[in-house]
Image 1 (cartoon, one colour):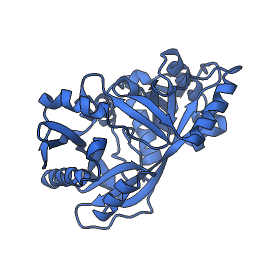
Image 2: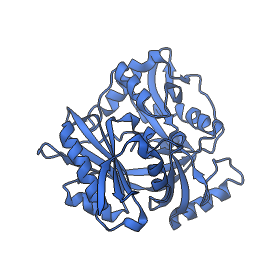
Image 3: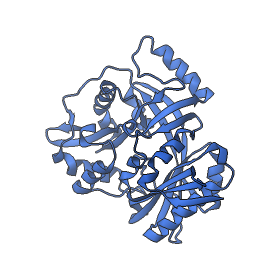
Image 4: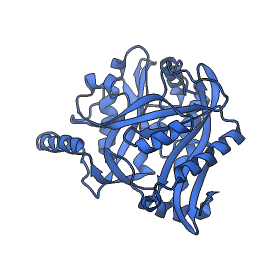
Length: 348
């Protein structure tokens, strides 16, 4: 008999033990480690909640959820975020994900969420099928690219670290670029500062701006997600392994970050925030500065979801690391429009 209960901090050690033997991924199969605090990852969400599936006293499955301010078709909305679904391999095919999903959706209904969403690896057909059966619809695909910087870091005279006085300008840049995107909350200087504060392991010192005599034309930052979650590599898919082999050959004469073997931790950062005033070209002077800081702090590789707009000037080596499907479901009965572009939150 599988029981579903709300997690508390008293369950921290059991949850850490559970995720340590639950592999995830397809192109890149990893095992998560969360450095002693399972719940730290959720601090970016409002009213986070974790549900545990139990077989007696043994935790055999987990799903995380929470709410945050978002938008849908130009209107402010409350989004319910589903994430962190893991089931002990010995307990798969027993309907545990559906039970956990129902618990999350009941919570979303209680809290007044307008819609729910989650991202799933494109190869995870069983979970995609389950979500489809429960009314979730594909909204967009997220191409994940691992970027390996090959050049020495340089600092253009226009580039400097972001300061508190820049919050209003950076918020305006982001509103200008993403204002018509679904799932973009819209920012003021105050709400942007709060969102930075709520992203675990992130701060304003991780962001650079292009400043030409007081005119902020672009911003680019990096979220060192490996500071709160480490992913230990179990295996790479054959195509990626071939690309990695080629990258290791290149590494003989060009410096690129270490590419982990099976059993090693895969350290990475997420490119965020990323915005510009007129053209992606305005990000060009920021790119080597950001990659240089990642290399200097030995934070591993950079993962970007907009690499196609950056590849024209990035100048490094890119590994296509797989595709995730973003799915959405309306909880208000209204139909979700599929034509609007979608803002991808950094935690996705």
